[in-house]
Amino acid sequence: MKLFSLYILLVGLTPLLAAKPVSIFDGKTFDGWEGPLDSFRIEDGAIVGGNLKTRIPQNQFLSTKKHYGDFELRLKFKLLGEGTNAGVQFRTERIPNHHEVIGYQADMGGRYWGALYDESRRRAILQGPDLEALKQYINFDGWNTYVIRCEGRHVQLWLNGHKTVDWNEPVDEIPMEGIIALQIHSGPPSEAWYRDILIEEL
Image 1: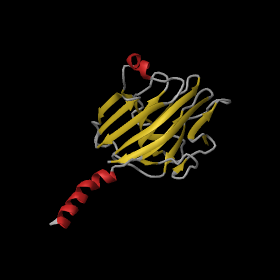
Image 2: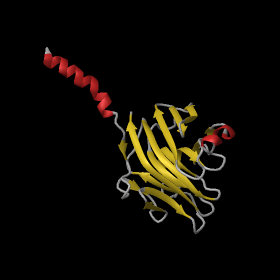
Image 3: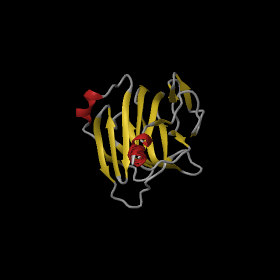
Image 4: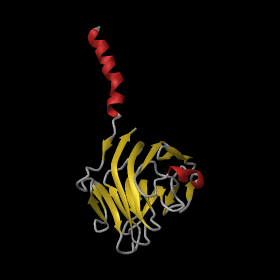
């Protein structure tokens, strides 16, 4: 009976033990990532896209090699430069023989803080917050946090602890898994910094 009770206890704890977030960036190398490494570097334990000296000629993406379906992704980011735009792609794929990707993006910068954008597909903001109301919670000069949670067709975003998106995907053909990618957008000299990237697969 004691052995059976112990077995039940361990089985009951298994989901909790398996739910611990894991780091997908070690702060030192690009292990597990791929993309145009001439556009990205590692500095002070962060992935940095772009630079503050020259114009960014086209969108660039550093992506995971692994695909993810249902998950909760947590990370910190900051934007440097004038007019900087960037984002975190998820449930995304690279377009063959092209620099672009296709899929969801948790957007950041300009008028797009906290918005859900559909990159290279519908090419539209699917849902976003009231930017004027959100501004008081944005650290424009330093680190911010993003939480991205996907469960089935339900996508939620939180920026600095404030929910900005609660989206239920209405289109059945939209893929429910894909890579995760970090973007630096084309435009003036700018940098997007990303660190403390943790994922919990659901």
